[in-house]
Length: 79
Image (cartoon, rainbow, N blue to C red; front, side):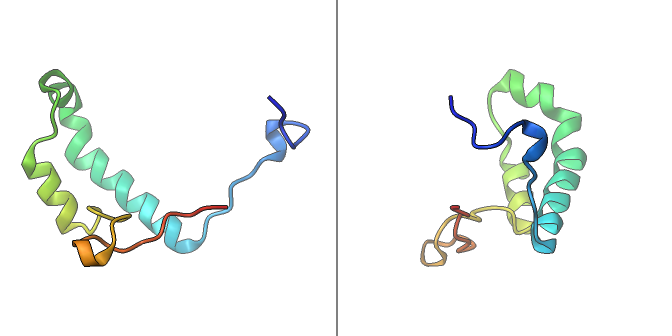
């Protein structure tokens, strides 16, 4: 594999404030709603509908899906 930088220390991700807000929102949701039940979800091999509903209420459902299809309409970042 060819890596364009001398080392991984030269690689730095730069996020815009809105990206940081999204990351914080997702992290808080997962810590509050998913982490306490993660083993149970894993054992059942499913995510309960209630969690999916709450994702939607937080505006975290369908982020990359076109608005015409009921999603958020965000375009995935492509470098």
